[in-house]
Image (cartoon, rainbow, N blue to C red; front, side, top):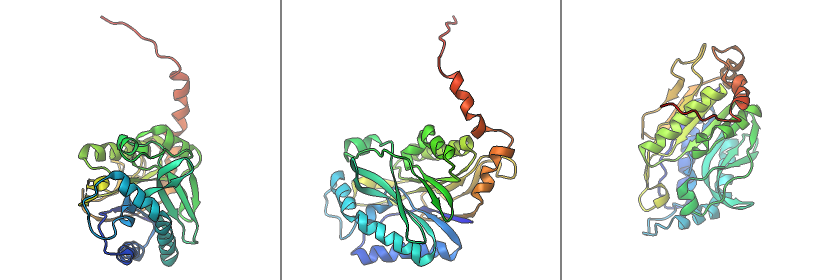
Length: 293
């Protein structure tokens, strides 16, 4: 199965038709290359609010509210594209109305017209302080045409227990749409993705936002490198990198992978990180302080 991970550069559009044409081009491009699963970036949905021209209003809440207002339209666009090209699409995240407030939501669209979503569980300081978002409350595991899929939105990937919950529930792969403005942030997310692949002995797909977006403080500058990661083990890349793009270069990174084959390392691998995870439990109940001088 081919999976396409986007390094995606959001842009201003004169109207919704311009945005639709761009997204159609991206999906068609990946589908034409044989991709069955397309993964877009965190806050790729900011484009739903980038209609018109920059007006100098940089208030993050303005952009948050613009995404919320367009969330249903964004979902419908990607549901239509998934059906049109017979692919599964993680549309990338945007702000939407959740049960407990406004959330950072990634939407997953199937080729049969089904739609699911995962809200970001652990918010960054910026999302808490400047965007007044609410954290997600429930982890979702999606049984899709391409396998059992979990989603960790950017910062979520830095918390191992979230990934472990998805893996323990039967995830074949975890998708990580990301958005980071500095190299340090991209490094944290990328290295966390690689760590989660080792811990869970499964496929991790990272799709970052890249490039500058003038007039929009939320995504004013973005850096990242798309990649597909696995545990370094028998029959798999020794460095744990299945495929990766060039830093800050927009475009698809497409690789032919077998997520269940990667997960087979849980039973036949050199090590048993997934199976041995529970052995930590009895060893971390107490920490004994020892003084050495």
